[in-house]
Length: 231
Image (cartoon, rainbow, N blue to C red; front, top):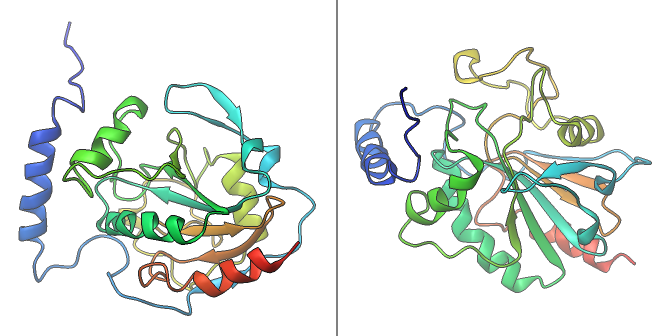
């Protein structure tokens, strides 16, 4: 019987592959949106009666949990993927959290964008630490990574269905269908890895940000300050 090769055992090869791919793609369009800053790609969410606390998710060890522990905190919800070029944003999460003690970031790995998150749940942290960003990256204690889920398509998680219904799309063109590993494609879909939703202390989505609306976290700061000033 063939044995499944562990992602952990493949880490050195995957790291080398990531470096080779980076070099091969010089001058060639990489999948997903370009690595540029587009500060206006955000939307204001509609008023809702539900909150993020109404949904259950899986932990990395496969346990079902709710999100009640985040009550009273400003929350940034991000769909992440180890082999996405936007993993560079992990480097900005720590400083952003250090500056804002009332804030937490929750990451939901997803493999629906060009298959850029191949790992199993128990292998995800090693991917972040040793592959991308890599170099023994230290995960901030207020950055919490949960189990993999689907953000779009037939198998979309109810949490993401709620977030997308609450917050308008930030762009007109979603992307190329050959890079999107799900069906059906809808106008409200998450566009790529590292799209973000900023939630208030009551767990209500307030703002949605395209992956390119970042600038090392500076794009979010005025919106965070607004939410922190609210009682």
